[in-house]
Image (cartoon, rainbow, N blue to C red; front, top):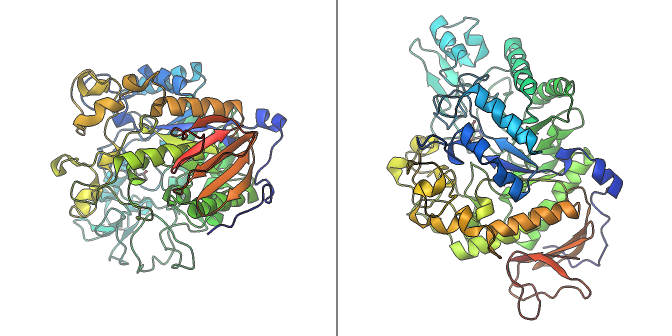
Length: 552
Ligand code: NOJ
């Protein structure tokens, strides 16, 4: 439990002068909005979102006030894992449009002052990628097989993080490794052709004008040379050394050499382009190694996403994250939702301390929707009050919950299939988002087609029901983003004011941020005026439970 601290007892955890704040590179403080192309906006009515749909809706992001968008994969793919199985890294899947639609999207974003980050999937290709097809055709011992991880015998007991074995046997008897689905064979990153190919792919998209790359499974590319057995659960996340040894498939030291090469390449380009690691690595100090000055620019902070809704857990993760990134002079990042986790408006409606579920179905313990949304709004306002860069996932600005009743027959996540339904999987957070309450597919597209069913209750979350409505989640996000920019919170520094069992309060720039986790309403310090609060204050102007307030 954190102790009660005197105001300003801690030195600021990151500091910058106003001048530095103005000149800081964009990625040190940006709010980046994740667009999941399948589910954002569908221009042609086939039920799958697409690039022209995104371009047509970019003004939403301007109105919201974010700095950049990150696009999940839109490359040609058999869609065995919703596009994270890429068969051609230099084109656009027809379901999402054409290459020129990507160019148009980039241009339209640039006109609006929005940066664009694209997804890069280097750990594995699709089994339909020409390299893997050639590997299958060429047979054992061939140079084509050497680009993947083939073995004559199954060399270890590894399991796929989606469930089931991580090795699949091909008709000639050899086995290949896939840490995810069998349709996603892992590449062999010891192979110079693999390294050269990805440098070329980076160049291809940098030349088209992207501002950076979110690097999928960045901690997985290099495997321990002996492919040793692993006797712990098959998870994407590493643990602390105290809990269990470092897994032989994740976070190997040699992976960093790859990112140093990429950094050298990216630095040849003008315009502050960035690399962002999707690395499920703990503790924060090991994650920080990915954002050393000659490696990537940012890494997702999943320890923050996983932290439970209590003052002590939030205090611990915030303090640790800021210290670890400061040690390597990188910005800390913050994230609460993405396309792989239960949306935080639902997750936080589960009892405090519930481990993060991998999907929720109708037969699972159900979150409390009202409490979940209340806490989600408080968590977001706490997050956006922190210095560094924050990631938002499409739909969270609407307070969108998880779809908790996706029918099994509609589920598409390979995790559901590979675990025999034990893990519901990630479809519930990937449902197309509602724009207009009364339109077919809630305005997602011109027809009522939607690749995952939308719940009947989603009209109330639609953008057009919330725009201009005081107190709506959408207006809360807009106000928070506007004030965050005005008060330069992204480049500010944090100093704790109160860290008690129920309360967390800190200053960042000139803003005082307080979250009340406990049942007793908390008064604001005298002389402070509220700027914004995640839910109304009580009649006496005190901060009730599960509310965050910003004050000056
Ligand atoms: C992480 C991505 O975010 C997830 O959606 C995907 O299934 C795996 N990597 C495999 O690419």
